[in-house]
Image (cartoon, rainbow, N blue to C red):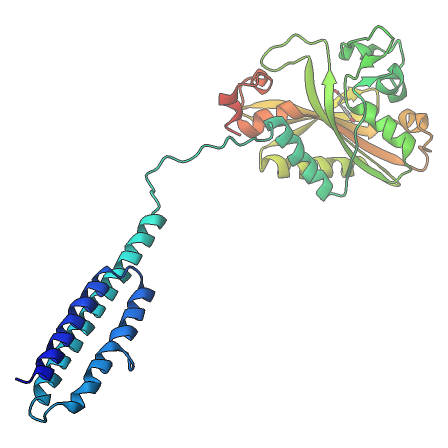
Length: 333
Ligand code: DAH
C-alpha cells in the first residue's frame, strides 16, 4: 500500500466522521442543506479529495473509488435520516402548539337581552310597521286636557271613574292611557294618518297577579276618508293573527268616551276569554277637538294591553314576574 493511498483513505475517513457529527447536530433544514453542499456538492469536500485520485496507481483506484462511494452513501443516508427527523420534529412542534383542548371549560361572557315586555312591544310594532303605520310617543306626565278633555271626557263625565288617576300637585297627572298620544299626534299632523304609539301608563290599582299601578299599552290610530268599522275589525284581526297565530278571538260591544261605536276584544287562552284590547271608531268630538272635519274624515283607534300580550305569548301566570327583575325568570326570554 503506498503512502499516498493510505493518506487518502484516512482523509476520507476523517471527512466521514466530521461530516457525520455535523449532520447529527444540524438543527434546521437549512443548516442540513448547507452541510450537504459542503460535503457532497460538486465543489464539496468529497470531490476535492477525489480529485487526487487521478494521481494514484491504476490498480489502487478501485479501492479508493469504492471507499469514496461508501462514504458518499453513508453521508447521504445520514442526511436523509436527519432530514426526516427534523421534519417530523417540526410537525410535532406545530401540532403541539396548535392543539385545541375541546374539554377545556369555556369562557363565560354574560349576554344582555331585551326585557320580555320590550320584545313584545317590538314584535307588535313590527306588525304595524308592516301595515304602513309610523311610530309615535308622548309624555308620561300629561295635562287633564290631553288625557281626558280632548278625548271627549269632560270633568263631570262618569267615565273618569273607569280609570283611577294619579294626580300631581301641580294639577297635571300621570297618563292613564296612551290615548293621549292620539290628540298630540293629530294636533301636529294632517290626515291621512296611521300611527302606533307604545308607552307606560299609570293607575291607582291594587297590585295583584293581573293588575299593576304601572303598566304598558300600545295605541293605534288611523284617520282617513272613508274608514269604517270593517277596516278596524280587519286590522285588529290581522294583527292578532300575526301576534298569536290562530287563537280564537271575539269582539264584544263596549263603551269608551272617545269612540263610537266601541268594542273590546278577547282572545281565548287557557280555556277562558282574556280581554286584550279596547277599540272603536273615533268619536266625531275627538276629531273636532284637533281641528279635523268629521264630515270629511273618519277614523278608528285601539288600545292594547302589552302585559296581557306578554302573558299569552309566554304563558305567564302572574304579571308581577315582569317587574321583579328576577334573572332566573328574565334569562328565559
Ligand atoms: N284607552 C283605553 C283604556 O285604557 C283603551 C282604548 C279603548 C283605546 C278604545 C282606544 C280605543 O284607542 O279606541 O282602557
